[in-house]
Length: 145
Image (cartoon, rainbow, N blue to C red; front, side):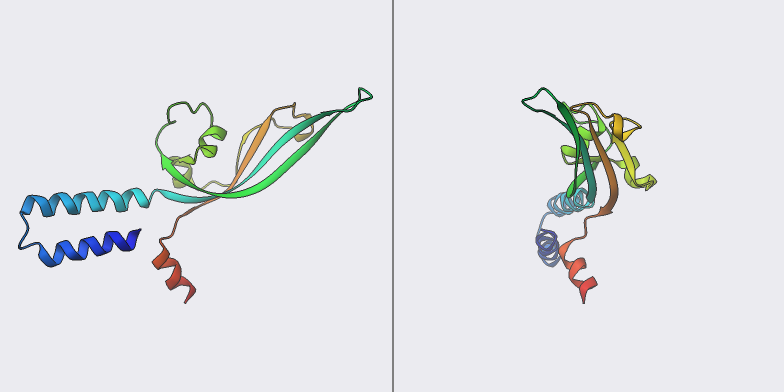
């Protein structure tokens, strides 16, 4: 996507003498906003931990811990979006707080309780391992070379 933005910038630069000044300014400002929004994207690696309760036919119950690690793309924001009530929901909705990116105090643990063995059914924990800026495709290709 960023290569399309650069192509538009080049076309505007080449023909700015033939375009109204206000149009050039507006186009360049909006392209910059698009670029700035793109830089708010991060690659987040996290581990979800939850407890799952089982009830066997002989009335014995068993609780097991389930965990899985995922990598997602998240957008940094300043406040909770509408309908999001906690930090786990925030991350699951594809968002993270700007202060998490700035502090870089990872890993961060959200939800659950202090003792993994005492987690109750339907409790969930999330460990955020890393938040790295999402690198545009061109920069990624240069790093590989």
